Image 1 (cartoon, each protein chain N blue to C red):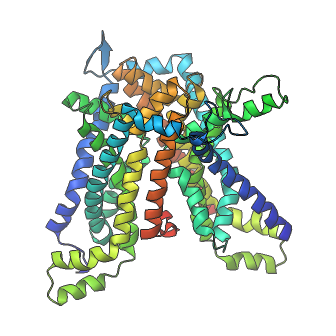
Image 2: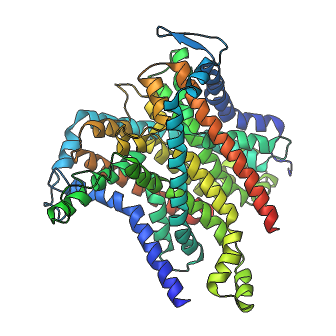
Image 3: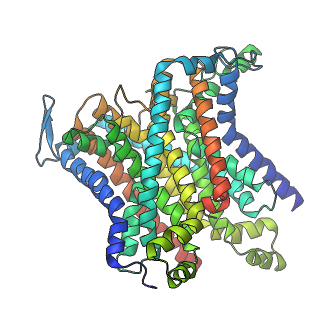
Length: 285
Length: 262
């Protein structure tokens, strides 16, 4: 019995979902990769083996700008989410308040409310005739509304809001597992609370920082709704290009190539991050 | 120490306010009489809700989302629970690899899954159908069910199931009468989560939707691109209400701490 279920039982239990994944996840991705290597002319595509679509992306300055904007936005959003998320996670991990379930609801509720709704909330706040601007203008504190939306600022604020819960959850788990005895040891040895934080808590929460940042970055650079609704097609990021090529221009091979470039960037960053994490952890040991 | 912790508390409160503000604003705008939400509000009104419930396209979208969420939850809960039983209990080579494979849709940006599925299902002639939406949603929700059920299964005492079997129960009967009862919190939480993710999913639906099959988030998105009136806020408030009920269900069955994994 300790070996778990018998072979045929195992196969039968695993089959439904693994088969679904193979047919409707793995195969589609392979076909997308094949499509990215084929060509399209006059609205019809022919299978082939050409890197033309990738060359087209890499040789156009416009796409380089978009790529740069996407990565830069991802970086700023990740840094902001870390700065805002760390205190909350630290508090959530250490607090003994009986309101903790409510605090968890606060963290989780934005996560479970649809992304379109969260963007809409920011639109009501940040638009030219939105809550912030109309309040400031009516009081006579401002002559004309501040440009809070349809630019990178609005997109960035909403992206931080949308992905902050992921950062908080990644950090809380790690901070909670730090042995309080280590902190007490630091204090007994005469270190101030601030120094204990910098020299014990922060280094030990590095795995959570790295995991959370990685997650937020890869979610932020592949987000589509936020840049569209709060950028109003004035902020161009890679996912918008993918969407336009697939659903407006109907150039599927080029769209597939763009999607794969996005994937390769995510994978490269994940790989780099994993390496960095390993090194950081070895440095601690 | 006292001052440091007070500073921390203020910072934490500010971040919670940042997290909740847009959601509260949407709900407030839904009950506000004016076309634009200003401060102070222009009076209480239910007219945006009335408008929401009277518009056929919103009602069809709401019904489609509920329908789709329900069947997604059913399928992904059954398939995900079956898979986690093997992935947690089986001792065989390649288990870790299988585990990684089964949860891989969580790692891939959803926009890629959406594009790949659209292209593939179009080649098969299945795109723009209810089936396309259902397949897409099952692919992205089942990994969450696997995670949730596995978390409960790890803490499960196998001796109970073995005891049932040594008392003469068949493995199948032992599973349904003992195991399922004990892992029910995880299974129910997984099902509720699958429904919630499907109900709120935007990216997968965006690529698999068609003019006659638009789930609520897509309908809302299309509406917001052209108009700004608070009917969208009423629609959002309804969706937030649904989500809150779902979250209370998860809290009730599994506990939020275990659910979030710490």
